[in-house]
Length: 587
Ligand SMILES: *[C@@H]1O[C@H](CO)[C@@H](O)[C@H](O)[C@H]1NC(C)=O
Ligand SMILES: *[C@@H]1O[C@H](CO)[C@@H](O)[C@H](O)[C@H]1NC(C)=O
Ligand SMILES: *[C@@H]1O[C@H](CO)[C@@H](O)[C@H](O)[C@H]1NC(C)=O
Ligand SMILES: *[C@@H]1O[C@H](CO)[C@@H](O)[C@H](O)[C@H]1NC(C)=O
Ligand SMILES: *[C@@H]1O[C@H](CO)[C@@H](O)[C@H](O)[C@H]1NC(C)=O
Ligand SMILES: [Ca+2]
Ligand SMILES: [Zn+2]
Image (cartoon, rainbow, N blue to C red; front, side, top):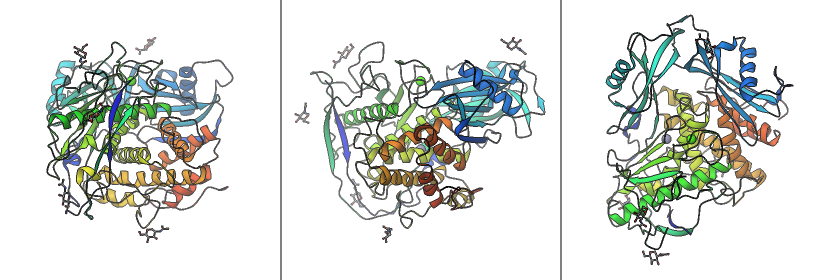
């Protein structure tokens, strides 16, 4: 029997002038954004036949042949990378290759349902020239170049040799080197030219949260902890939360999560002498670093991340869909990648972030302290921040088949921020109708929280439409969280409309089988991630959600979804950040 404290957060207060305070997260990207060829995405509702549809072939063969036929390319240029079956569709992720060397940025994804192709995304290229496929620069030299370019150190992950399509349509041969800098919280995949030794560009594996605060009125902080007994879901975590697949644990570590203090992976919080009881009562009058408070914080992060794992597992973020587990109980995907969650990390303030490497390497979460108040407040005790960060792991892993390279262009990053807010939004609703939602209120001591507007169905409260993205893009340094607000608000509206239409399940976190609106919403959310192409834009993310509804619910919500998206400018003819409020024929 396990007993865990759960933090309950109450609405807070206050009117300090924190609006527009820019936190550091957006300024740290290197200017060398990797080039990504344009991505096309087609959805086919009920599906189309494909060349091997009448034969008994493997997913790899069927998907590869489909890509070859569609793109009229030779089978030698197509390499099956990964694939899996969800409860509703089969997903295949494919890379372009040349001389048996795969491309880092030319990829395809095909989804099948009932033997037919339901969606197809691709960024395959026809390079005008290829660098020789035999490198002339050694791996060691490439590592040095990567470390120098990105001010970090190569970790122990083996380098790979790949091709990279450039903006001028040539193909460079590259050594791919992971480089980290713990002090700066950076973690990149560096692309080093394997012939010239020059640094070309990088993939940023860390998604940061930067928080903006609007001044508002005061309210007192009320803390409330609850004891929850055995909150784990055996359907999602058959080993329980305190067993990593090799041995039982008696602290804040297990198969899904290791929650520790600052930079010491062994600094977990331990159980009580009576067994797996973590009964640490946080004292808000004391500094977060007091033992009782840091124990409570680690216990809370451990509880939230495990609960998050168990919920999204039910909706499809499983081993085969590239989730985070030390030991994989069901087949598919790579293990050895539970989330390493650093609580009260002392390297930064007023922020939080999540690093998502490819499947098989642990995701890393850093939670920092916030100095807007005295005593400081701990992000680990604000559940929506923890959920926001963890959801970066979901979207980065499920988009593009576990490579963690497919939410890198600005618009895709913005969508990533939006999904993270939308997941926090979904997790915190307990009844219909779907009320307005803010996040980050506790750490900032401000009811407005960290975003510019509450998420709302009311277009006065939140007026953001697709065209708002264009205004955000025009601001000198684009803040991907601004773009994320537009997407998160669209998703808030989708959630609200589905709940209005189909009701609300109070057991949705433990039971994904219902037909209530909040259950439907999370299914579409997660199904669509696997369908959408690498580097999706707003239109493609919308289309993937509508296709997900076709796959799972025979399109029964098609017009509802179109109406919601259209109401926020993402209608049938929306394009290039111009609002369109029209519906497809039949709606
Ligand atoms: C690519 O790999 C296949 C299968 O391993 C092999 O038959 C073929 O010769 C290789 N081609 C090149 C260009 O290395
Ligand atoms: C937890 O397990 C370790 C390793 O088995 C053991 O040394 C330690 O005493 C245990 N701690 C508690 C609090 O039960
Ligand atoms: C938890 O700790 C509090 C004191 O902080 C105590 O009153 C309560 O009985 C404890 N509960 C359990 C189940 O150990
Ligand atoms: C929160 O903000 C209010 C209003 O600015 C202030 O009175 C209060 O002391 C703050 N709380 C903390 C813990 O700093
Ligand atoms: C939307 O919000 C505005 C401002 O709070 C309010 O005046 C209006 O009545 C709301 N509209 C609806 C339909 O609730
Ligand atoms: Ca995994
Ligand atoms: Zn974020």
